[in-house]
Length: 607
Ligand code: F6R
Image 1 (tube, protein in one colour):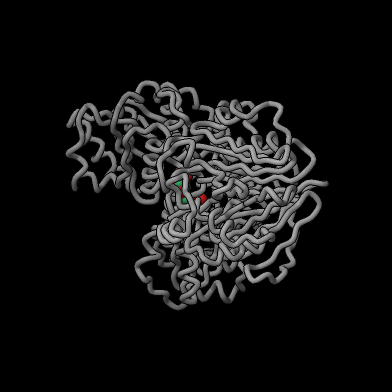
Image 2 (cartoon, rainbow, N blue to C red):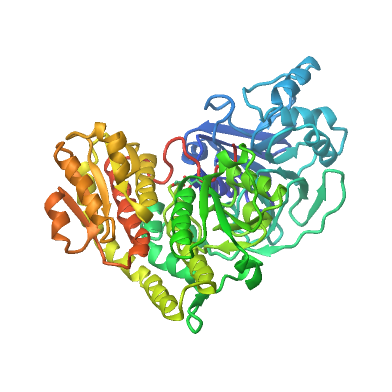
């Protein structure tokens, strides 16, 4: 989703901003722009397409030591150069970049127009510079605050005024914004990725806060001008983590990082002597944990599927009733919050608006909500009542891969913790831990089949429709596999319970609709084999992800991807990996933009 960077300092602002925008590309965007102050005037350049198109349009000699830049993911108004940010006031003396949605922009725009303001764009964002213009009488920060007080909706903004060289004003309400503090230079950005090559010292703004920066200093206040003292925090990851490191795509790199990222999700959280898990950030005593009678998980997309695996684990291993819900639905259906129910908000980015608002709604009703997030300092991580970081490192590809396996790993740990407080014996706990700790090596074994999976993807990538079928704890994995395929290759794919196929989707089966079955050697294997035969007798093609050496499955299937044998409940962590690789190679084969698929954004900060 949209990205922001602002810079004040001695370096050439255009270069810093273009580099920051390049690093924000992963969020998803369709146009980009920047405004640089140089020789007493604003230079505004905006382009649809990629950052390289914008870079090619920026005069190489453009100097300037402060400016703002933006990647736009269109919501209001079509994708074109005019609608790209920054937007300006009537006289081009104020420039603003905005993330989020201004819900009352129509009425504000009408009023401003009736007062003589002339608008250039179809965007909701353009009302902001005009409102600032209206209230400006020499003090930019004051005018910004007056303007913001009139906005309904969400924003992360940064603005600059031609009469205030070297100063930027930023503010947030529902859309993240951080201040970066460098050596004689300062930044404002929508996420730290944009500025990490310059500084690791950051201040995370909260909703309702305004930051005023120049090269040497920053000041934070609320909208009523009360000064707010902020803590400077240190970003814990390294620049190398957001580089491709020899891989062609970030997605490929992130798939291959999983043996390590799963290990990191477990790191320091297993207590071998007690055969249990220790999750420090929960902010819950053993007594609190023992009082949990139910769990509810809210999330979106891939995190929702990770939550589904989590729900299955919590019920089957910890014997605690658990439901999982799409966050956007939960928020608007006036959910009942029951006593002794623990809630989880699962989100890689920690910024997904649907999940954030669902969490706030639950908290408003008195629920305790724990976050399972990747991005440290993200809004969900900060506003939750406690939680667990998955420590995957930055996930740059839009399609989520390593976050899924790490989120699921955290649910294994949480299930172990709760089970060991209840019915699970020490010996069972030891066995559970051994199985969990064997997962990274098993993922490595699957990654060694990369070439075979690639060959299979080449063979199947011309098909237009796929069914992904699984059962039990692997049913959400089938849905996750289908989501991966559709989002990056644009091949239509549906994930279903294999048993549910006969209730409808079987009508789709013919030689043009391959079915990808997940077939572990668990209690449901024979049932799945019956479903496979049903497909076979209708001339459907079958790809199976099955346990190594399973000749029965090889005999029914057209193609088999083998995974190592595991204890039943651990299959999701390995079964998902070939599905990620299959989707990845299909997308590459079809020449898709793997890391930034069309229409998608990494961090979905609008509803
Ligand atoms: C799929 C994908 C999305 C996200 C969803 C939630 O590959 O990336 O479906 O999983 O937008 O995002 P987070 O986990 O950041 O809340």
